[in-house]
Image (cartoon, one colour):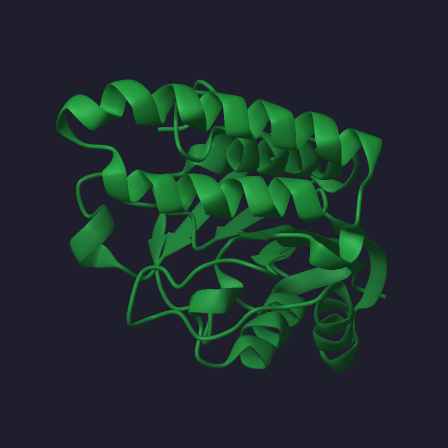
Length: 217
């Protein structure tokens, strides 16, 4: 899903991947814990070191199991076991996000980094386990509360990408049968226009998503 502009979420997936690649290229070192790894799509991100994927949902990901089953609220690792923790699009699905960030901090060694993305403006998804939305300030606060030093807090695009993505998800209601021949070209037109307009005038307060990188002192 999302491999071409004719897919409903092509633009946001492309931007999310781009920002993660940039962050991991700089901070992805040593033993990496992919917290909430899903189908391990992030295993190919730039890094130097070993990879450990952790997932809690055995019913959903049992056919492609991670290296470790466990909860982000009680990580099955000793303190300081990891050099990098990646947590991509997971925090909104956790009923106690501060506890998850604290656990990520606990398992990081001194000088290690948490690389995290979470939505700011987005529709309800994966019901009923969708609890929160986050500003960049909120993510930085959670990091400091857990004893981490925010290094990077970046919005993943601005208003136009957010508006275009949300409109495409509305159009998805009509992406069936003969209407697909009309809807899928609209996906492409809307997303390409949103990408261009966002480059011309980027209003970051309306970002759909934020990236946080935080360092363990």
